[in-house]
Length: 225
Image (cartoon, rainbow, N blue to C red; front, side):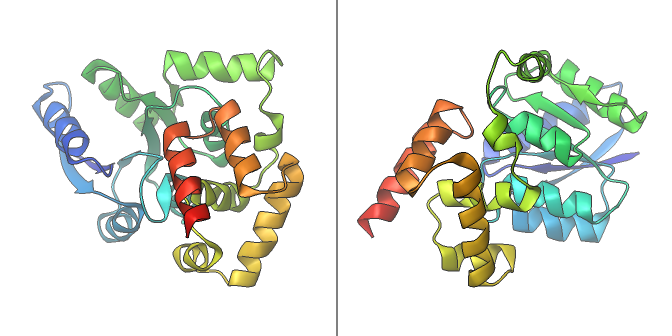
């Protein structure tokens, strides 16, 4: 019996994936649910799931930092990203980080099952759209190099900044000092060649680093504060 943890801030997604997996005759799974990165980290520690389906865009610590912490824990859990994003630099960055797979949310149950079976067999699994995107990046057809130069922690700070979080909140979420957050922000801005949160948001929109509507709304609210 495999233990699967499904992490997504949308209840319909969590319950839908759980229902599909538990009803599939080719799998014997027990599913657990989490609605945030913080919940995912707590459950990962408590139940040590075999497979974790992890969303990227979530409130709080977010999927990028959650993936980093789980992978850093050096456990046997296999992390499969389950996201609406199939292009831009995020998939490639998470693959470099060490996740075991990346599946798009518009997929069917067959692909979810294939992903579980592949990673449990020690293989790597990518949705076709994601694999094509990464291949085009490697060929230089799509330019996302500035983002791929970011470290895992820099990527986490970038993602939380795009969600509209200020330095103090990011410090609390990542459990690092505010001074350290400022240092990471400086590195991110320098590597990406931007000078403000607005420029950062526009660059993220251009390269589809995150959901552009979410990013633009978050930055706009931050500027109004």
